[in-house]
Length: 157
Image 1: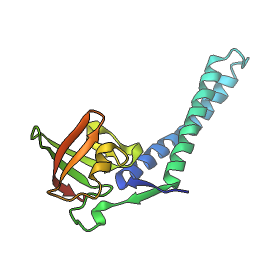
Image 2 (image 1 turned 90 degrees about the vertical axis):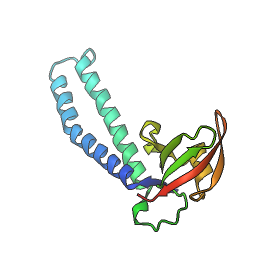
Image 3 (image 1 turned 30 degrees about the horizontal axis):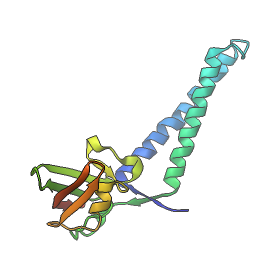
Image 4 (image 1 turned 45 degrees about the vertical axis):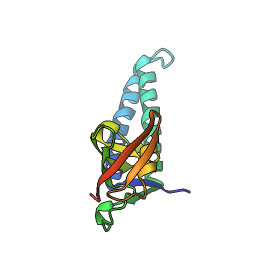
């Protein structure tokens, strides 16, 4: 079984989501029981909706439990800051064409959220940055074409 990298924050979010889903289980079971008491199950929309909700909830629980079972939680805050870009580091880049500054944290696939500044370790930008150091210039091939950046800062937070 291959391990999937995950940040400490990502693991915490998954555990919180799992906790919420597990607490919903009895409520869904109760809704099914109440709907069952209403009579004919073939034409009982409440019953079918509750059963569907139960199926979705159980699938989400299984998915999260699987992700947690194969997770390799990496806490970069406990690592020595070598200035090298690795999984979990926060990187500040300067676009050499526009002087625009961008900051990204390199995270696992399920944690990625570009609006929050978290990019997947398997994204073109992250793949181009892994192994680079502060001060390096890097050309990254993106779907929009090749972009040139300078690595301004690497943080292990």
